[in-house]
Length: 232
Ligand SMILES: [Zn+2]
Image 1 (cartoon, helix red, strand yellow):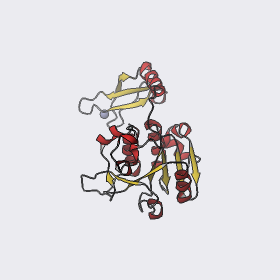
Image 2 (cartoon, helix red, strand yellow; image 1 turned 45 degrees about the vertical axis):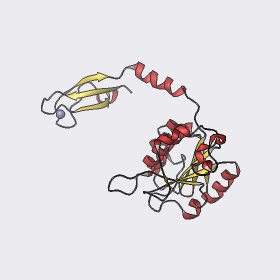
Image 3 (cartoon, helix red, strand yellow; image 1 turned 60 degrees about the horizontal axis):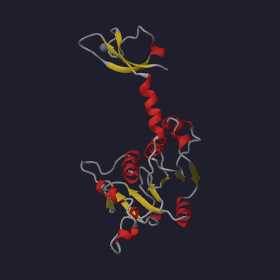
Image 4 (tube, helix red, strand yellow; image 1 turned 120 degrees about the horizontal axis):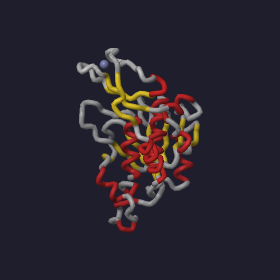
């Protein structure tokens, strides 16, 4: 693959788009208007090398794992794998009907991230959470919609590494992420939301503020916001 940016030579069109030069060849026509195109710019090989090296430059981050309960969409699961890899989420726990990377379309959406993030499958999320709580995990449920839980606040991530001893009495009982314990971020079904029996096991409930007309975000998008907030 050799990706370039091509641009339509018709001044009324100027359609600019990325293309694999080895696939289309030098005489590629504009997909919009059919006029000839020219290569506007090529991606440099150093750009690709840099991003490979950046990946290895990992700074220590809080120990966050995530549990996906009954996520229906293979695209959401693939996207969550990719985000988990980027944010430094250590492991994914896939429960109920959630498709696993054994499904080829999950791998296609995850673009290889499914090989970088360890995962485990469970039939029953309640069983999985009870076992993880036994291991010492603090469980945070990410609520769909505006939720009843504590709203995500980006300023609070600064308190993430504060030792519990520094907190006022009772303070550590509110946001669990003030402690050094490993954290389990939990998301539920796209339509039904989090299983009430699973929600009841959460130590804390988080909600992303909704400022527009819609009451919830796509689950993979919500996961991305929460995952970066928690690991940041
Ligand atoms: Zn054109």
